[in-house]
Length: 313
Image (cartoon, rainbow, N blue to C red; front, side, top):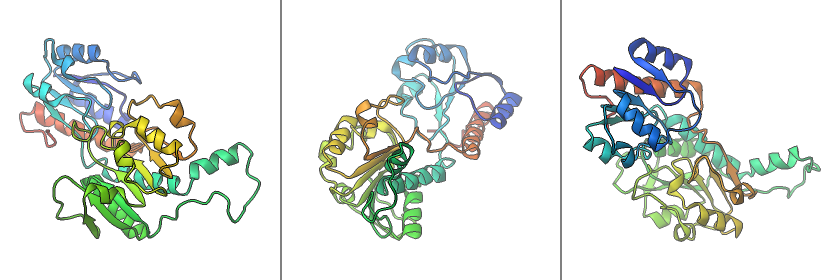
């Protein structure tokens, strides 16, 4: 079966894939355009796509030879699942492998934003630091604060565990369905109460329901000293509303690993000192990316062998 791997994988993953499939490895850094995705669907039996590859409804409008999209990543908002199913294409993802690394990045951003770490490093590198002062760069003390988690799936639970047991934080969370096993001591609350925490972390999937979930109205429910952390998907936040809130100091700060129009980041956002910006580092550790690749390979192998892929959507 002919397989297209749309982006470079780790050496170990590429070697394992090459040993089992007639694979073409595309090493371009940019994602597939809709036209390229459409051409790939017509040419290959299997495709291993990832973030940004444009498998929207338009990509499925032409001839479709492919029978499976084994997505590399837990998020799959770049794939129109309904269009894929209508075309007879199975779609899978790689949950589980990303959980701990993404939760670690959430904690990184919580600390960086609350303690103004990025701002402090920029000041030091620019030669503006004049020495320690008792009131210099005062931030928010994280230990013991209330953390509001929006979305209590695998990643939300992993964040809650780290925050409560590592930093003594009180955990409240909003989830659309009831969660009976939040792992750490936590209270399920309505969205406004979760948004009213000292620090708010977004850990929901990108869906039609969560698109622009955090807009001006939601941001208005946050406290002036609060920080917003997004390690989920960029379009969950209406970026223009977040920029306005940060510029007006309606919230104290934000920590972002994802962006609404990724990889484009607005100049207005870059210019702000009260926001920490990371280049989508959530799973950027070699062992994690390899684990994701091997999970995608497991899905491909199962499909090839006529058994249900373990992570079919």
